[in-house]
Length: 87
Ligand SMILES: [Zn+2]
Image (tube, rainbow, N blue to C red; front, side, top):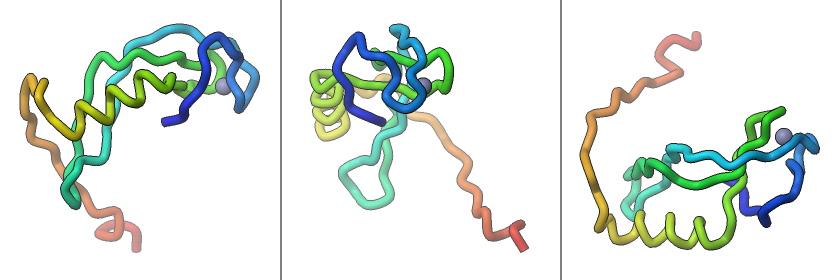
């Protein structure tokens, strides 16, 4: 996730940005914990797909992850070990 001012072109490839709502995976407060946040407003690059978040959105994301006051559901997530097949 990268912080970015609105209405710029993509700083990586120069592509056009468009508004989108995305799902992000954030590191939680506890070790090994993570929090999935849906419907996060972003500007997404049409060319390379990089997502740019403004400072206000990033602050709100941080608050959501810290407080978890708006947990709407919990899901089970499979965890795989790459090393188990990467011989
Ligand atoms: Zn781009």
